[in-house]
Image (cartoon, rainbow, N blue to C red; front, top):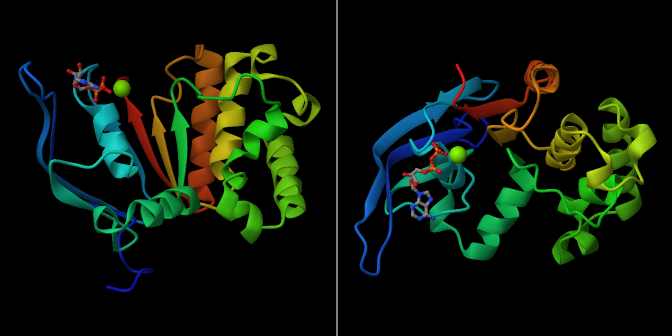
Length: 213
Ligand code: ADP
Ligand code: MG
């Protein structure tokens, strides 16, 4: 299958359990298979403890399954070397976490620029171009007057918008969001969902993990 016609994600027979050294193993996923196609907006829903974050880590190639495979855009990600996998993750996936995971001592601008700060990136890309893009994203997300603030000077909704801008810095096709509204009040949660819908209308594939129907 050519990379363009391949599903964005193919999960095949994924199984995963936690625990070794003594304690009982906790089986979290057994034999999970599905496809996510280009342009989809998919919600993965389940109660707390049902294995959603574990699946998020597997789909994002952050955690290897015990068995099964993940293809991203036709590439078998766990057949890659660790370096190739890191490159693919940085280049192809925008991650949005419930806890935002912003760097506390870095400005909004520097947080958005984080994906451009890996050593290999620094050589390969024009930092000025990246900074222009970071500023454009910040403006689009209503953060232009907060570029030099620190995360703790922002509301939860603003922090989540910084995290989304960071996820968009590389022109990724796929956004994986693990309970991105979990720490937001209803107004900010609604705005975050609207933003994800808008990104989906622009052609990005969105996988939204949530416990909330
Ligand atoms: P969810 O995101 O749906 O709340 P998780 O994927 O975080 O679920 O967790 C699924 C199950 O795996 C839970 O029972 C949780 O306690 C367990 N678990 C999660 N992370 C670990 C870990 N690092 N070590 C052991 N058990 C874990
Ligand atoms: Mg979770």
